[in-house]
Length: 591
Image (tube, rainbow, N blue to C red; front, side, top):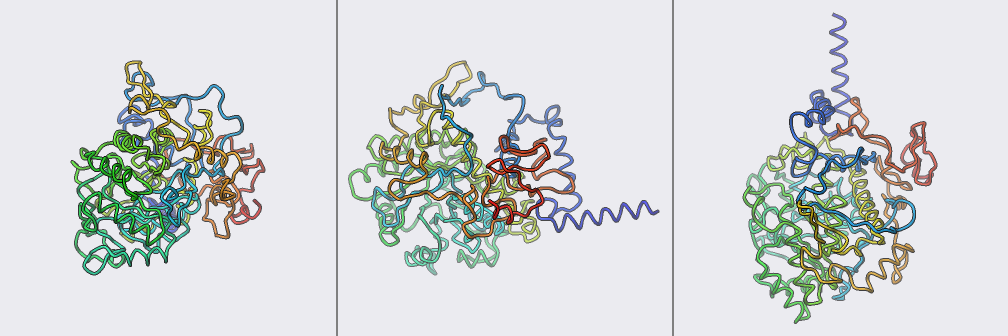
């Protein structure tokens, strides 16, 4: 009898621990039974090897891709052993990065290294508040409403720590966007956050938002890759009184964004709209769009060439991009995939010598080093990531975004499910992922003998066709020499920044807070320390099972090259061992 009571007491204690710990959303939302996920996941490789799928077959993100994101976000070893399990020669459209015989000499790139945009956003058109973005990797538009308040807060905190820009999505600016990350304010077709009582666009509302919030640029959303021409949909189940107030929409009804804008009706009036926003706010103004018929892009390039109006940046969203809810046929068959669509648009502007005056942003499954580098080879100046940072803060690819029942508290408005997501600890994971991606892209550039991703061209990547033949990216997409590169002046400046740590025009480039530049007077979340490499931050995922959320891959320990000692203590970035029992604040002060 006493044995039964002991087992019962152990179960109760475990349930209490699960409900109060903040490291695992799954365990906090589903005490006791949540452990079965980790136990099954622990033998996942064996089950997949003999029964289910390989590491590269799952979609939209393969098991290998998710493992890399999870390990990077937790500061764990994200290396893989025994060599590649891909068939390099016989896999169609397989990307090969052509390294230099004499790569950049020196140590491994560090997450401390700032990697700013090679172009100054808004400068060619003389915007009053033109600026050089501090990061080539930024967070794409995901609205409060589509994502939970805890998820938005975690992403914004992470963006602040990593020195990235955070796109608000079309759902407006909420209090959860105000935790350190600077914003790109997105204006969608329903004008949430900047509409009058009749639902029409209000410039006065935009001016109020810009004055009251850390908005660095404005993005006009024409369409998104997952459902272009359809507009957005926020299911009624996700609409809370707070969302209703912020967006100005009724409760109890699905919230649909129209498929097109009413503030302008063609390319000419779009450019008038852009210039009006830029003149009144002083901010750089750009557009976001998926790529379908090319007439729009040809007319836009023509009018920018022949008039004194134009956009400061263009965000191209691939058809493989994500969404909270979309009809299957739109997600699967409407709009060009990123590489094809981006290259077609870029060529239109390059032919008219306009590409060097526009900041091009890529979006659509670019959140991995090799895919990001492909984007830069096509002409991207920056990339936006969305689902990958969602994975970093706990997403398990349950594919239930459209139901309002996301088990990890990310794509839901359920208070019970949201309580499992702790914004403070998850923000550290978001920052770790962002700076690791940025570092790995930079290391690929160093392997190619280059100092910055902006210098990557289509000649540096080759695509194998599965028949033992290969063609460069420049050949595949019909690029001319010097296309996909900034002008010589911008290349020279950004190389100076990477070599000397300062802009020759503006002075020193500040180090990112999460990337070892100090806390900047802000309290850092658990798992991220102010003076250290964030991939060496103390693990915030330890629990009774010893498994991290989304894990089961056998990875663990410090990142390679991080200076771990035999005693198991983590090494700081300068090789000094850190006390594993010290608080994060203490370690930050020591740094």
